[in-house]
Amino acid sequence: MTSNFVPMEFQLKTERLDLNMWEESDAVWMRQLVGERGVEMPSLDEARSQIINMRKRAAENGISLLTIRRQKEGDLIGYCGLIIGRSTLEEPEIAYELFRSSHGKGYATEAASVVLDAAIATGRRRLWSTVRIWNNASFRVLEKLRFERHHSTWDERGEVVWNVREL
Picture 1 (tube, rainbow, N blue to C red):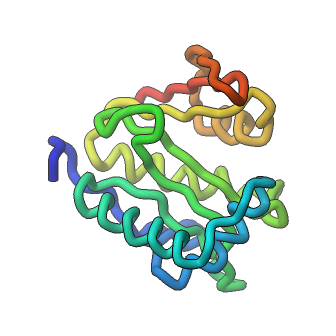
Picture 2 (cartoon, helix red, strand yellow; picture 1 turned 30 degrees about the vertical axis):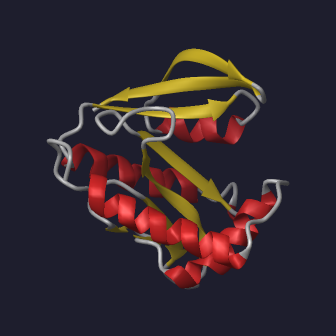
Picture 3 (cartoon, rainbow, N blue to C red; picture 1 turned 45 degrees about the vertical axis):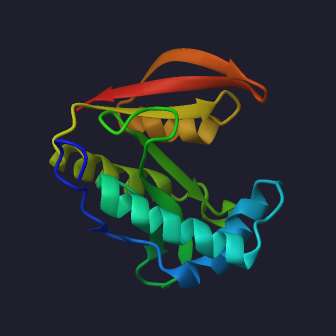
């Protein structure tokens, strides 16, 4: 462990959802989720490789994205967790992505709320979230979690809004 923080809990539960560490078998649905973005889907081997690397990094730095499964239905609907992303291990980003079919049902807010609690339990003082300017649904989730817009940066794909939450 390279930081002064307690590792985040890698098994979280809400009223409707189970969040867990990735399994190699999750590569199949991970590919489909990436495909929904309108970008090229990774091959099954590439997706498996990403999951193996994610599990390795989680063991090294104590944070990770977690799969989101609906308890009653048992289906995987997306992921949520903490990443270094554009930020740092000390002040990581909260990130989430759900299949379009799961949008608008409060799942992202529910998952992000329990991940926020897990982040607080690690001893961190601040979380970030970077969101593309067009992503209104993500801004609504962050508002419910009491994140505030902080500043913007630009890259080849346009404006990225940095949102912050003091813990």
